[in-house]
Each structure stands twice: as structure tokens, then as C-alpha cells.
Image (cartoon, helix red, strand yellow):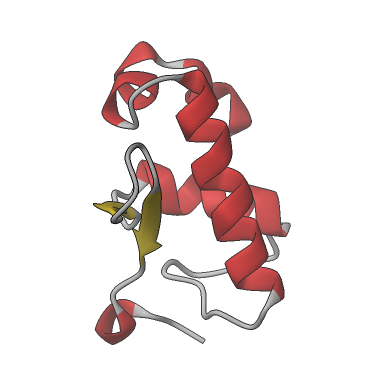
Length: 81
């Protein structure tokens, strides 16, 4: 599953490898802080869960006020237990 992150399509979707890594890190922090997964956990580790969310197009980037800064949007109505 992590191999899928090497796809140029996914890298380009997030604006480059560094930004993709930042998105993964921020989503991992959200999960560790108690955010609900947006896909079924199915015994996956947190990292595998974030990758599954990315592949399912569940993670959306919202540009923030400062230049180049962003936040990750996780629609609450799609959250799963």
C-alpha cells in the first residue's frame, strides 16, 4: 500500500513529495490526537490508514493564511468509527 505513494499522480496531486510527506505527518498527528478515521481501519496501522485515506481521496488540502501554509480537511460526516 505504501508503494502507491510513489505514484507521480499522487505526488503531483499534493504539490510534490515534501508536501505529501507533510500531509501524511499532519494527518498522523490528527489521528493520534483522536480524529476519527475516514476509511475503515481493518487492522491497519495509523500510517497505512493515512495512505488508504489518500488513495480514497478522503484528504483535502485547504490553503491557510500564510504563504505556502495549509490545513488538512477531514469531512466529519464521512468519519467512521
